[in-house]
Image (cartoon, rainbow, N blue to C red; front, side, top):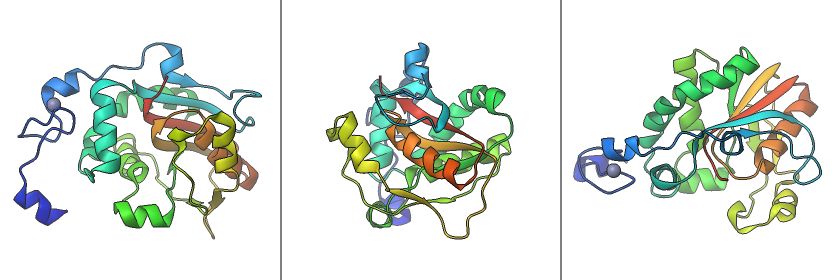
Length: 216
Ligand SMILES: [Zn+2]
């Protein structure tokens, strides 16, 4: 990564223009999630899963430059994008904290095999600077114990089956009363629900979700 950085000047993850990791023009094109459907996520009774997640919230609608930047973060190894994306999400996280009160940020885990292949967990890279900015503790207390097929190819019932038993509390992890799960993208609430169910079963009182982008 460091060697690559030296050899290649930074280019905008969204439009490719050289000079910065995310250029001003693309950053200006980030569309704040404004409609509740783009922004909030509540337990979707009967369609997705149970009722473990209290509220889920995303900073941006998952489209245009947001979509391209998140794809670069996930698939092109552009891990330096994470702090930039976290920085522009701080205000939205503040909106969720107004509801949740003090909370522990818990990144949605990836399976160790995928982490090895990618070199990082993008949710963790977003959660860390968010926690520092908001002065909230960050704790990796969940593990993904089963690799799962890429979710975007699956319909809702298949997503649920795919995620069943995919997550577990990390051995020896300390349970936190209020948790905000952090992820890069919310597609359906299936992943957040699966994580929230594990946390609630372990004794967490309330579990919220937060992501950079929300697919609508
Ligand atoms: Zn750009």
